Structure formats: structure tokens, C-alpha cells
Amino acid sequence: MVVFASSCNEGDVITITFDDEYYRAATDSSRAEFSKVFEYTPAPGQFIGDGKAGFSGEEFTAADAVSYAEKRMAEEKYISLGGFGGYVVVGFDHSIDNSVGYDLAIGGNAFNGSSEPGIVWVMQDENGDGEPNDTWYELQGSESGSATTLHNYSITYYRPTAAGQSVRWSDSEGKEGEIDYLAAYHKQESYYPQWVKEDSYTLSGTCLAARNYDSSGNGTMWVQPAYDWGYADNFSDEDHTLEGGNMNLLDIANAIDSEGRAKELKYIDFVKVQSAVNAKSGWLGEISTEITGFYDYRLKIK
Ligand SMILES: [Ca+2]
Ligand SMILES: [Ca+2]
Ligand SMILES: [Ca+2]
Ligand SMILES: [Ca+2]
Image 1 (cartoon, protein in one colour):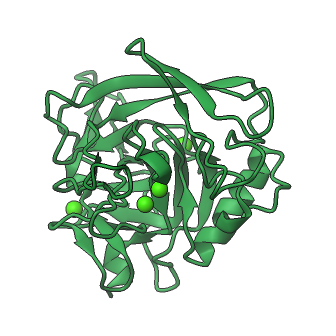
Image 2 (cartoon, rainbow, N blue to C red; image 1 turned 180 degrees about the vertical axis):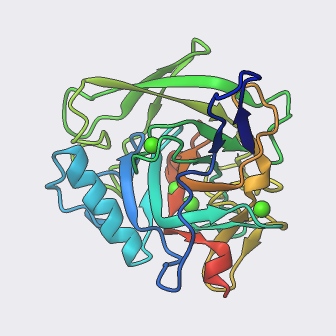
């Protein structure tokens, strides 16, 4: 878009402003992979703080958490976003164009029967300061228009008072529950991120209806079916691929604003993925999105 500001008075200066003043074109040295993690704020979950997920136990600050997430995804290993609302924010060394078709590839660990959808959000660096402090736009997926999708849903998690306890939560629908402590599988003291200094914290976003069920009837075989399209860590028939990694493909053309209206973005600079379901599957624990990396899809397949 080009904005002309002018006046009929002779001698007035005509100013021309491009809204892509801060666009960073890809060059030959641009990398397809994300270049930086800006924030890693998972919800509580079985993998949070667990050595099996690569935590050292020395992640005491938000910066430590970011370093952990950067190192893991640089090795294409998963980070877990924990239960509903947990998220990670990354940036790239160039702006990612909204080309015809898919623009982003996001790695996860979905397989048939194990989909844990994460909603993808994008942001343009509107003020050009290199920080993700501008406007997030959700990429709509197959459930965006569904009557069971909750917008502006929020959940508050409470720090356990002793080791080995489940993490309590309450939500904006007046419900309460727990992220279960799974003593047999994840033995770290607490599933509450230890770098979160507050004794409770609130995460907000769009919540998708759970689809998980126990196919055995006796609690042994939990199934987490796929959603149609438009999510990370989702074994979708439409946008999930195993070519070049376990990935979901996303299109910036699906961006919507906070009112649900289409938002045209020529390019984006930052991407966020947020765990989108508040549910648990028995001994498998909470449904939690995992991410192994973020890519400029056009550069990746070049
Ligand atoms: Ca596109
Ligand atoms: Ca900015
Ligand atoms: Ca998970
Ligand atoms: Ca997963």
C-alpha cells in the first residue's frame, strides 16, 4: 500500500510513505531456518524441566529458557509448549514473503493418532526495531469458524507448593483442573517452568475443542485425532508432510485480525506457535504442542 499525503496549497511538500519501509529482502546468504528465539513461555507440562527434553535444570531466567529453546531447535529437536496457551516466538534473518501458496514450514512430532495442534500467529516488524512488539495476526485454520472454538480464552496456572504435585489451573469459562504429575514417566520436581518467578501466570489465546478419546475403553490406548488444516504438530491430510522433516505448511494469506477479518500481509518477520487444546489423555498426560523448528518454506525447498 502506498499512502499519499498532500494538500492543494502551492508549495506544500508531498510525502510518500511505503508501509514496507522495514521490509528485509532475502539475499543469497539468507537462511531458511529461524535465526532467533525471542521468547519461550510454555504452559506447565510433563516435558517442562525434564532432562529427557534437554533441560539442564539450570534454566532460572527467561533468557535461559530462550537459550534452551534456540539450542534444541538448532538441532531440530523438539521443544514442548506444555498445555493450553504455552508459546514460543521466533524471528528470521529476512522478511518472509507471502507468496502464492505456502510460506512457512513448522516442524513438529505428530504421527497418526497423535495430533496436538498449535495455532500459528504472524507479525510484521511494523516499527522496524527488530523486536516482536507489533501486532500479532492469527493464521486461521479449519476450526476458526467452528462454534466450539473459544476466542480470547485464558487460563491461569498455579505453582505447586511441594515437589511431585500436579499443577492446578482455572480458566475464563469458570472451570478448574490439573496438569497431572506423571510420576512413572517424568520425575522432575515440578512441571511449572522454574524461570517463571510469579506463583501463578495467565496465558490467553484461541482454544480448539479437544478430540482425544480412549479407544481401548480401559485407559490404555489414547487417540489424538488430526484437525483438517492450518495448525502445527498436526497430522493433517492436507498440510502435513514428511518430506524434508515432520512438518506442517502454513499460508500467510490465512492471516486474520482480532475481529476475525482477513488481514492482507505482504510479508512477515516473526512467528509464534501456541498450544491450542486444554485436555489430557490419561497416562499420556496433557495435550501439548511440540515444535522442532521454523522455516521459510520457499527458501527451504529452493
Ligand atoms: Ca502465501
Ligand atoms: Ca517491532
Ligand atoms: Ca505433546
Ligand atoms: Ca506432539
